[in-house]
Image 1 (cartoon, helix red, strand yellow):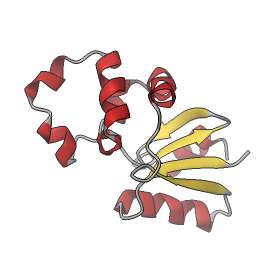
Image 2 (image 1 turned 120 degrees about the vertical axis):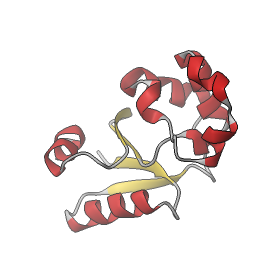
Image 3 (image 1 turned 90 degrees about the vertical axis):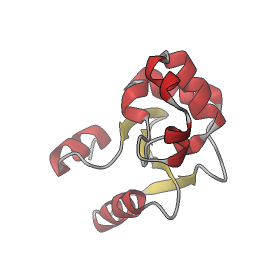
Length: 118
């Protein structure tokens, strides 16, 4: 099954991840979250698989604009926020066989390969 990679085209980390996949001959489908934001139902499944905390794009303007109340949010509140503003999602987010398996691209190659089952 093809891996889906969610992110935005001008994200440096997304570009790095796509290059890594290309160099290893891994088939993937890139989904631009600006053009095709994930639904609340999809985000809910991602949060259940990965947890809300690792999915937060803490370096983005959208995150900083939330203010300090975000520090006390429940996973349900994060699901709502992610569904309303895809820029709050850490990038890239990898989905395999319909399940979120990895978010971000800072792990070692061995960990990335394991999570993507390569």
